[in-house]
Length: 462
Image (cartoon, rainbow, N blue to C red; front, side):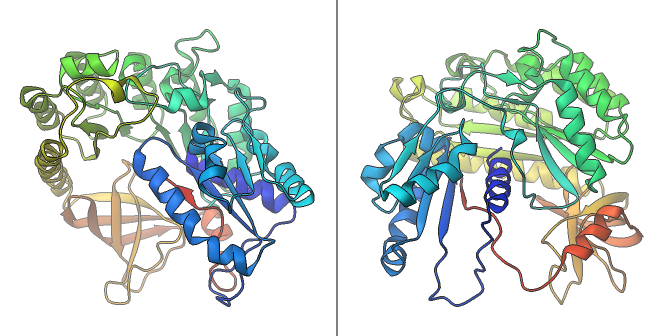
């Protein structure tokens, strides 16, 4: 979601006459504007921001007219504190007022005074802003903003507000426009994406939306992130299985396998419900790739609780997992809970979990050796190196594949059918069989000119 916001900010600034700074040019030349779009999910994001801001002090001395803006969730959280911690900042803007950035920059320039504007509620859905996409063949499409959940470890609802859904017609119109522009893959975004419809009074709205995507000619791949087990209904599973361009991929956050920990997290499901969803997905889509999020060391987590998480990991056979050590976020209920777990215990559990997650992912990838997959060649990967002569991209189920091309070629946005010959925990290696060129590949090829430049905005994430 932060990446998509950065694309909007970039598009908006370019529409105002800004151009991307060439990072490969003269090192003594500084940009006129640097924007940090921040995350607040984990403590490390804040450390990165303030560390980066401190490094800009000499750059600002070299070019006093250079402006620095900070937006996103950390800006929404810290607000005026950012100016106190970093005098180089000219503008602070929140998650609900991305569109105010050009005005705030101009006001700071004219008044020669730092500006802070933090809207407490969404004024206008940000999809109306211009967007400079990182890839011509792929796009993010927001179906909602905000979240109605109250997970005790998460500060996001306090920063992005209550869930607000877009009208399905607006979403489908945006998707059609993107496909007309050459996009072949879209990812539907929401803080709790499958809760889409709760704001509209239709519990089956998300499944209907997936099916409607299947009617759009030229749209070859549809994905979505991130769903919540509480709202994951059988009609969504059916829509995934029966809609030809919805990919057999599911990212389903677990967070913990322990019912007691899930209760303290205020996650409104338990182990049995979670595993029931996994079983029904696999029944409908036997070859689906399922990934997850897991937090280790949540307050009060016992060794028995942790072993319940390990049990779910072993039963669910995830093809990948984002694993996190619990991080206190000021303002969340979990930050003041008793029985905070020591760093040493959390680290030891984390390492054990990571070893099992990686082993299972490796075993699941090895099952595909000898099979053919269709890979969408990715932007910016190019040939992996001169020795391997590989291109990289994602299979239909979202797994990363490095394709040995030999004398063949393909462009970002083209599809390559390849045979898997080897696998590792986080990728697979394949040999080229057939290249299917696309309009997206044509557009990608025609857009390449001159040296690479630093497009977009630094996104400070955890």
